[in-house]
Amino acid sequence: MPTSDRAVQLRKGVLELAILAVLDREECYSIEIIERLAAYPALTATPGTVYPLLARLDKAGLVGTRWAEAAGGPPRKYYRLTREGRASLSGGAAAWVELSSAMNDILRDGRR
Image (cartoon, rainbow, N blue to C red; front, top):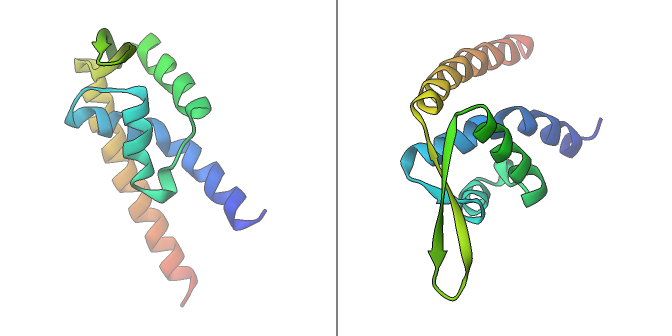
């Protein structure tokens, strides 16, 4: 598997956590979320990836939504973390630290 394909597969597993982290800072509409993720090239995602994730997070009760008028455009759907979303972010962040630490250790040990 080429490196770019491998990165895509790994990224799919962390995008949900990244979206929750973005929303932990402030509520955003979908394009803002995509732009904030794009600030980290490894997390760049398309609307076709992000919209289904947001729908799943909404259905799971991890995010709440509201519609707001936009100046010079159609209304925008804003997303914010719910209490359950904050708990999920906290648990996901702890799991990420544990997993990434283990992977760093095994990768380092494998190079000795």
